[in-house]
Image (cartoon, rainbow, N blue to C red; front, side, top):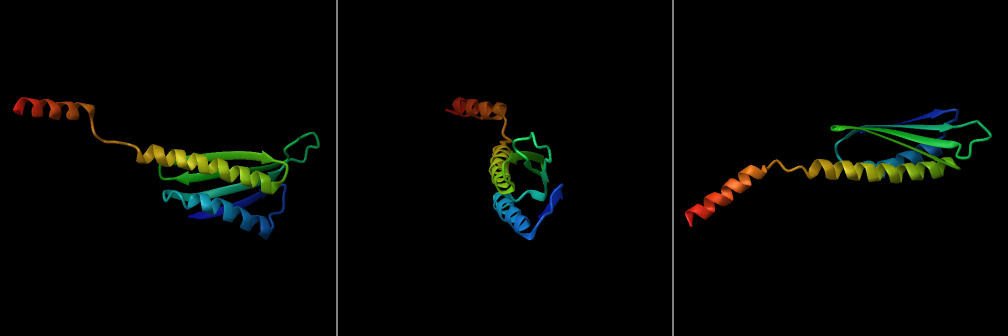
Amino acid sequence: MHIHVNGRNIEITEAIKSYVKEKIGKVAAHYDQIQGIDVVLSVIKNPAASDKHVAEVLCKTNSGTIKVEEAGESMYASIDLLADKLARQIKKLKEKNSGFDNSSIRTDVVEEKEEAVEE
């Protein structure tokens, strides 16, 4: 699994890159079906905007794609918010995929009726 970090209107330093890989790497360790993660960090240069630092994640899994976007006052704050949101989304996807039961209601009812007839 690869984590790609790109920047838009911002210079990506090694400190930011390692911080992203640390935070997103912890989230990615919870689910083994992740194929790749693309992180885009950007800064809005409009002086009227309140949350100028935006972090986006595109997480590719075997069962689909998760896209998460968060904005904050600083880049580190937006990365923290993004990691929390991504963790919730991955947990939700994991529960959805693992909770699938292949049994049918009809077969369960038929087996119960057969047991009642034998007695």
